[in-house]
Length: 122
Image (cartoon, rainbow, N blue to C red; front, side, top):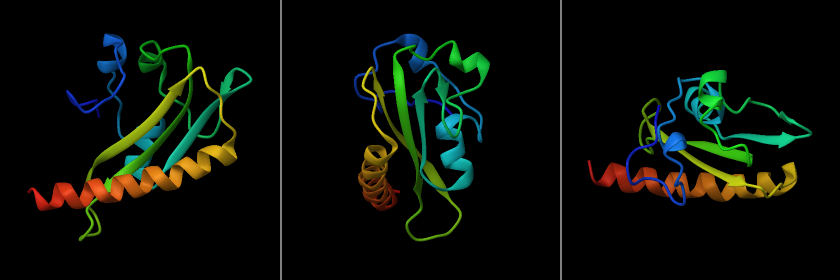
């Protein structure tokens, strides 16, 4: 799994743009594998829940990253196909799990809208 060209906002670090993950790795890979939204936070020097990424990929991640929410973009008509994942993350600003749960719902809703748009265009 990788970040597709021009499908990102405010990512200017070429190392992060070159990040590749396996299915099941980090938030993005787990959201894809488990077919559900996954959240991880950096708290007291450790990542909560799903680890952020494996050791090789971690070297490419900005040290200021504080949380990630990833959600699958599921085919709206068929159970099975996943078009990709959508992730939201933030540098420096910490959020409580409760606040990220509220963001989860909005991100999931945007992913559903994107899935419908992608389906219409294929």
